[in-house]
Amino acid sequence: MGSSAPPASVDVGVDAAADQWEISEEGVPPTRLATDQVLALIAQGRVGLTSQVRRAGEAHWSQAAGRSEFGFAFPHMNFLSWRNAPESNTVLRRLVFGRRIVAALGAASGFAAINSNLARVTDLARKIANGPSAGKYGFWFTAHVDWVPAPIARNAKLFPMWDGFWVAPLVESSNVRPGTWLNVYLVAFNFTNENQQRTIRVTEAPILEEMKDSLTFTLPPWRWTVQRVSIPATLAPGEHNVGFTTKTGTERAATAVAVGVLTLGHVLHVPGSAGFTLRYRILHPEIAKMVTDWETWGVQSAARRFETANATAIMDPRGNRIPKDTILEQFRPYLTPTVILACLQDKVNGPQPHLTACFDDFVYDAFGIDGPEKAFVGP
Image (cartoon, rainbow, N blue to C red; front, side, top):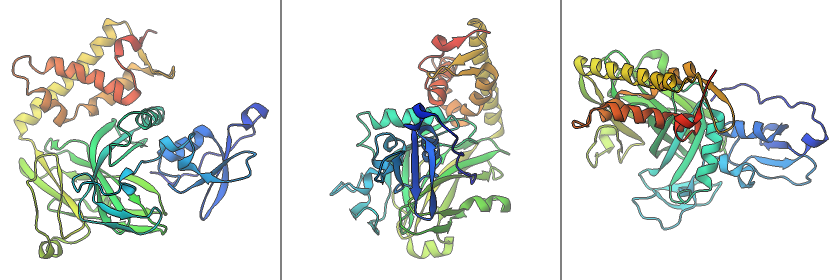
C-alpha cells in the first residue's frame, strides 16, 4: 500500500488540540496525528487491527478498532468471531482473537471496495458500518488505493493461504481484450502476532518476470495490504484458468480434488491445497473491437451530459469540485469489457440506456454522488 512515512504532525492551536491523537503499535514509536490523518492510514492498511490510540490528554490507551472515531474504517472480519455458523457462511469453527486461527478448508464470503478517492472510502465505510448489512457479511472492507484507475466494489471471498494469512482476490474484469491484461488485486491480511513474508505462485497462465514481485507480501502483525498482479492476455481467444496457490501444480495435483464447477468470473477453492482458481476469457478480436467501440460511445455519451448541462465539473457531497476531464478519464477504465458485455445483452433496448446508467453508477461508486445531474456545476 506504500511505504512512505505517516503524515507529519503540525503545531496546532488550543481549538485543534482536541483533534490530536497518539497512535502506537508494537515496534513503532507513538505518533501524534489528527483524526483525518489516522483515518487515512487505516484506509491504506498502515494501521494494524490491534493498534492502540489515545486522545491528546487522555491517560489510558485503547484499541483503535474499538473507538467510535476509527472503528468503522477498519476491515471488519465478522467471521473471526462467528460461532457455530453454517459451513456455507464461514470456514471457521473456533477462534480466539489474537491467537492461532483454527479453520476448515474453504473461504469466507463478504464485500470489498477499493478506491483512489479517500473521502469516498471513509464515507462508504461509515455507511456500511451503520447499515443493516454490517453484521451479515462474513467480512467487509473499504480500502484507499491511490493508484487504482477506477473504483472497484465487489462481492468477494477471503481465502486462507497460510496459517493466519488470508487473501481476497478482486478481479478488474474477467473478460479481457487480447494484448491487454487480466488485472487481479490481491488483498492480503496477516491475522497473527508475527511478521509474515509470503509468496503466492501463479499456475496455468503466463506471468512476466517483473510481475513476480507483486506476488510477495511482507506484512507486520494484524496488518493488510493491496497488490495488483497483471496476467498478460497473450493466449488464444477463449476461456482460461489462472491459479493462485502456495504449491506448484504438481504438488497440488498430488493432494487436491477440485469440487464444484468453475464459472466465468468466479473463484474456486481447491481442497488439499492453499489457494484458489479464477476462470477468465480472452475475447475474440471482433468482439474486442465492438467492446472498444461501445466504450468510446459510453465516454462520449457522458461528455454530452456535461455539455447539455453546460457543466465543467461535478461537486461531490463534501463540496469538492471534480473537473469534467478528470471524471471522463476515470470513467473509461470503469467501463470494463465485462461491464460493456453485460450492457450488450439487452437485445430489445440495446446497450445505450445501460451504458448511460453506468455513468450514474460510476459517479456514485467513485464519489458518492447519487445522480450526476444535480451535482453538475458550471464554469
